[in-house]
Length: 128
Image (cartoon, rainbow, N blue to C red; front, side, top):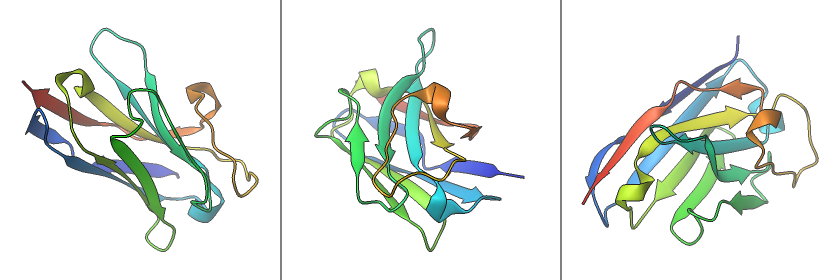
């Protein structure tokens, strides 16, 4: 059974930083492209960042570009999202997602519909 467990969310003031983690189990992690998405209340799920299975390629959504960094540690079966210069608009539930298909080493995907496994999410709240 595949499990993705996010952690690291919380309440932070605008301009602050948070580091989210997503620990995976039940899948061959090094074969899986991974992604972070977020969903604010009343809004659709939004792409934040994605990383290839090797970590050699990354892609960011417009809102994350220049402020967030996605990374992974295949020895620990974990991906991370370092979020800096946080804004109130970053307030959302953040989800990690895994692709169950083996992809090319640099494959990244920003389409939430093409991810197969999802975590339960972690709340990030940025106060002004």
